[in-house]
Length: 463
Image (cartoon, rainbow, N blue to C red; front, side, top):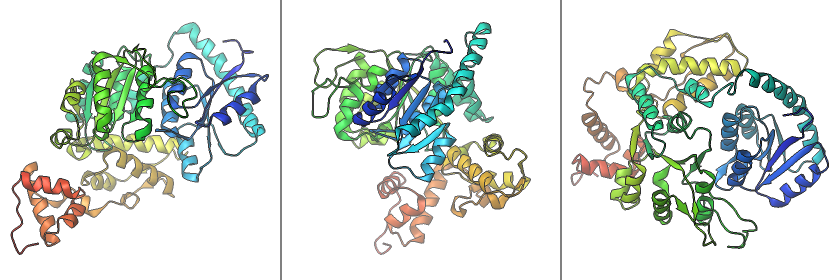
């Protein structure tokens, strides 16, 4: 890339008038700009052009702009990102900067404001190009995405090492669909990325989609794309997730929450690897791999007729279950050390130390939010700490989640403990099932299901 070549800018915003006006502003300038009005269109432009700067709306249909920001910074670490939004708040700004955004502008803004923001990045981009050119003389690949992902994979327990080994095995079979199960916060998307970036599809797109976040009216269009004029608002042809993930990986998070009316179409596309855009008749061949994830009991969803058994069989070629953090306490210390080092560096507090009592306290905690909860605990502690030593007071724990290791329960049989917890919860609220479910952190339907499973009955006069 020559130093005098124009900087390539992608404007990703769902308001077509805005992208057109901003694109018009760049015409005749030192920049070459591209427009995209959806995540799918944006990923397509990114795959076809060496974009230097992404101007990204934080709110897009069916996708959180911050999730796109994280994906872009992972796949294209040298790309600068400027976040824009009409609904900005301080929390969004902080998250955007934390995930690697260079700047943040709130709508409405003057085009001169975006010009100034871009000019602040230009010198960096030019220096980055010169550095990249020097590196390419010695190596075709200076830094791999695999290396980044593996550094985020922290754990020493046999359980998590087994998961990692299963992920690497899955990576060797690029056409096999994978189902990831585990509680919220255990790191299912991280495992999905390891599978993708360790296999032969790693040079193509990894697209993460929240199956429950897309509105009913946009489901078919987002997954299959549409033809111009096929419905009101379809002003251009549009590629869907299946098409844009050709040769890559489509990660379907919260798969158990996918609406039933879409499941049959997903099944057919997965089996045949052929899709048809909404409003079109021409079949399109696409080669994608699906990695799906859920924190629900998906077999129970099948029993309840809320999830198709044939689709489950298609998605479940390989199954990897990620155990909860409380089931692998050996990983608490290395995870804690990793997160402290990461946030201490990020917040410019490099001399942070941890008291021994912190490790002892966290070891006794059940971590209902798993690794995500531990990471958030550490981030909060680093932000609020005044000195260089973190103590137990910096990690407030919910007493009801102190684990059996602290409570001295000798019986570690899961079934017996679950029966005992349900019975105690029911007794404590005089057998009010809704109140007992709240105490246990589950829904009333789940409680009733478990009571039937374990034959826990309420006698007359107890309720």
